[in-house]
Image (tube, rainbow, N blue to C red; front, side, top):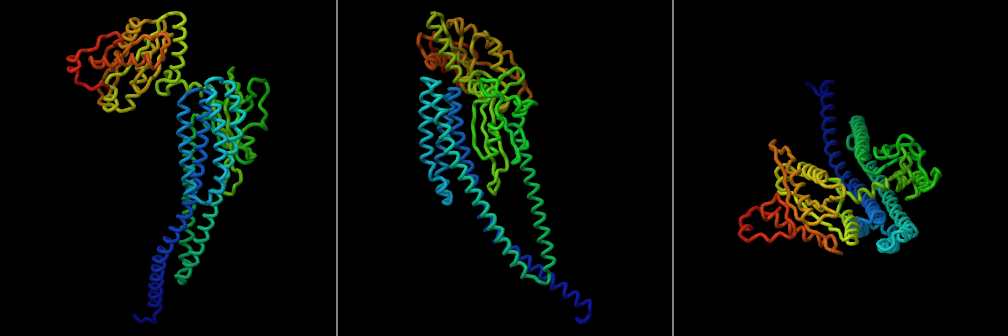
Length: 510
């Protein structure tokens, strides 16, 4: 075939076009990879800086929330949570300063602000044990001001990180633009095809990104439905955007129309609402609001804040609110079993012991430990272990008097306080409870039924004795019951089990 023929020239042109196109693809891949690495590294670093700044802000919120939880409930676990949050905050602050020099100037005033707020918070917390009312007044007078100062610094840091992220995106866009200009010179003969491919690729990436963002938003809203704190969100124009299930259940169909100033018949001023003030850029926290619905008066603790977009403008306002009664209830109850928790039972014991000391009546304590509980978890799974513990707790409560107090002491241990009961009576009561628990039947992972038993120790409180002391004596009796073969109740007067009997019991103590 002659090279001059039209068909031959078309084939040669096609071959050249394919070769140039192929070369363009190879070079395109190499250049795009290099540009992507640089762009992604820049954007990722800015993104991580923003996330770290937001995490620092969240950790600070946890510090204050734990301190406030202690002030409201007196539960020492909140103090442990605050100590953990303080340590985490200090660690995150050090990392941010070392990793992101551009944020150091924003964080420069935070050390003094934190120190001032902590001084006020620590003083109020320390005073709570001696004078709750004065401590709370001291807290409300000094801590919110320090908190607002620290929050402003953290919000400014997050805003600076957002600006840096925006600049990184602009630089990335500029590098991508230069890359496209370079790619345009690689294959002039197929520029139209390359342009079409690039436009299709960009369009596809945008569609994928939009779809991914929509999916992320749907997933986030599904997660927020399960958050036990009411969340209400408004758009920048003030229109309702979202309310999670807790908010809908708590506020009811009338919404904000049934919110009052605490202790008065005055409706809460809409202009003072935290979410309204958040739309103006304020960060606000209030505890003077009451919800009145269905004959109930529900005290609320509400915090409002704004969410800003990449340009720094307010995009949304958020109000997070909690039923203060629920805070107290959760502070005093074990979440798995519904029994009183360790902090609550200490308070109850102090009250009952004072009554017993004044009246001269006996007060006994029983410590119950489910037998072979670890093997139940190992063999049938932790979900089954939870069900066993819940069912046993319910049965123990049902088997005792209304005046008796049942609490989860820890793990599979359950503590019982028996007012007006001597050690013999307490042992009989716990024996009756053991019979009831033994009547429970569970279906195991092997589809075979199994039963559960417990061992228990009983001790009677001595005048002026604290709970840990009497529990220690009950625990010693419990240990003897375990070593004697389990599924039994011993009191503190039981003679120590002989060495020969102990040697015969080969199973480890659970």
